[in-house]
Image (cartoon, rainbow, N blue to C red):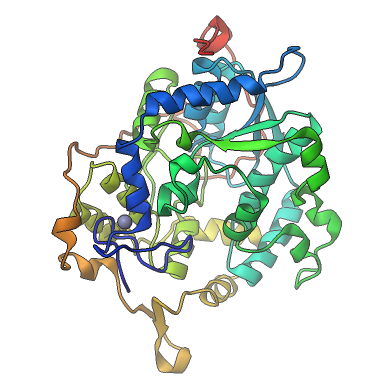
Length: 433
Ligand SMILES: [Zn+2]
């Protein structure tokens, strides 16, 4: 396997990478733009784009902002509402695997930023049926989350005639350098289908082994092109206009709003995905079983490029976390009413043969053909390295509810917290226009 001489990403990255003649990947090269572009200028450009979407009559929201109880949500809403003075409608697809902490984070977000919020909750029976189907078809326990969180904002924008959706970072740009920041790539149905949905639209899942009906899948249907065109819905990504640094952004939100963080089972990052029981646990283990790497590498790559970690330090993290057994597997299997054997069989079908092999004529144990861990001192690694300028420390905050059971799924909650009406953004935005 070929590994990037700078960040360590492998050539079988599911979003696809290219390598230059120094063995440095496209993700690293596009990332260099973060230190080259004039971000003040780009921030002003963002202001001009947002201004064009302000509701003149004041009788509608200015934009839709997809949020969750983690992952840059605070930063995006803070930027849109406090810095740029927009009036966003927040929307959430309820993934069903919520942590109590994530629900608190979301409730505090809506309350402290004084935003209206809508939530889509699909019935658990339907979610389980769909998840069984997607495990069989693509080895994914998360398709319904990816589909829901990328379609519900678009449906809402069309339904309420709000022509702008504001997303955080575009993964294709930030992880693998699929686009330059200056391409200002926007949301497309094609990217969603090919990458977020692993090639399966909701319509493709009708029938199948689970006998899913159109009614089961209708909540995940993408609005018709004519409907989108009628409202003129566009989706922009903030990382094209703001120098994206998820760690630094989370730390600002921690100070400003008391965002809650937590230790994660399979990565050193304590800021992302604290709202989900599985994303950094079983779901990440599945990612590893498919591609031979997990979130610990994603997070290491990000920190290498932002000059807070060396490649060797990142490799040490990979070695520490990649074999950690996910403690949440049993909980998921119980909820799905599925045996461990069935689950494992679904995943094994989708192991990438470029990195995994099986002994005893395809019936025995699986083993990795290679690993980044074997490529610590490859030729060219020293030449490709960036100078580290900062240490990489992640904070763990105290819980706002120390008595809560953080190990159970939490589905429905009121969604706001009392006693904060006079604080937060009720006092008015900074209003950059
Ligand atoms: Zn790289």
